Image 1 (cartoon, rainbow over the protein chains, first blue to last red):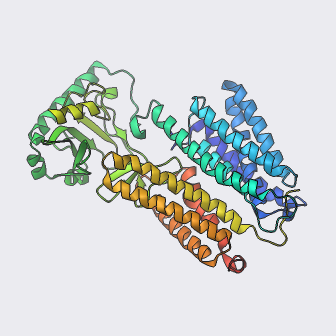
Image 2 (image 1 turned 90 degrees about the vertical axis):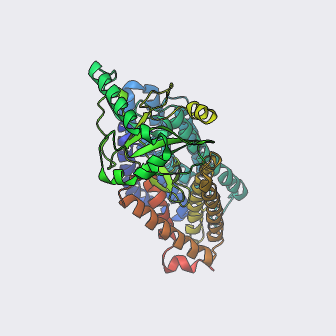
Image 3 (image 1 turned 60 degrees about the horizontal axis):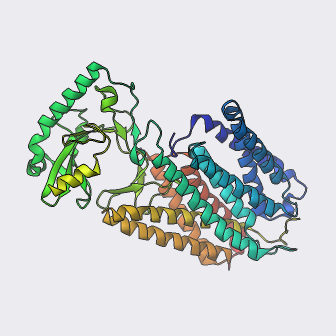
Length: 363
Length: 128
């Protein structure tokens, strides 16, 4: 699963975290010294109990396949719950900070070397832990005794940004560099299909390719595309641009070779050069038909940050934040048909090879 | 024993931590837009820089809250209310926005917690 999804085997962790939250909110205030410590300490104790609950809940699933991980989860959970209960301990802040930092770094090691994939449960737990770290370290007005304020400010100012940036960068790099079988570049979600195309599917894919190519060849002259209602759907300063026909999008034609919702043009020094067509479903929830089986898999771009200023996009961060002015959306499922030779992925690939686009520009 | 406050609230310090986190999230979002700007998406450069500016402003507001400044409390509440409204709308409208636990924590729980910690007369009386 990608980092924007909840891994099914980790979903129980969310339940564990919520149960731990409820128990912590009910039980911790009964501690005789609960009111004697700052609210930031109390909040950190509750958040550590939540993290402990997540770790405990993940033990059963990992027990059979990853016993060492289960053992680590157990000790991690015990340590979190112990510290959540012992918030009056003299060395509580130091011990909590050490445990929280070690846990976040341990997670990054796990996903970095591929022992786990980044997912929403892992990332949400790390957010909870980093927040707990900040609350445990932040100095509070009116504290008595040796408070080590300068050390705590330094720790807070360094640890929080560093841990968040490291977590985001690691999750992002792993997610993009090692996509699972259902994802391609930029997190595009692929339709499921049988692994090897049958002869009938090969024939159907070839037929779709031939019909589509024949239907869009007139649009090699972009003026014809313009006359048919296609308009650039993004910046024309990029190597290629999707030209969209809003009438066909609204009509909801499904994989009609004569009325593809989009055309893809290379932006060359000698004008737009047609690279292929794009079919797009009207709704978000269903992939289109794939007559070619694994040869004609539809894909869907999820969690992209789209700006209305010139229809440009970026990727949503692992912390579910887009740049200001852009909003997080998922695009409707789409299928490309490349009419130029695309050696790396074939005629129905999610992407056109950038080298092909460069070669078209040079020609 | 962990140092105990003498009848002092630690809500501003808690809010500072949350605003610092939010500021870092905006910083990462701003930085993440810049590679797209380099690739030719010129508007993303502007959005990235505005996001970085917002990150700096949120951090400054956090410091203001830490110093118990009334302007910072007001600014933080207004900012977080706008964040909750904007995030709530994007989650409700069927545009395929992510509704996972991270989005709920960052876009709703965090700003909601800031509003909750700063609301009311008692909290207001701590600010000058």
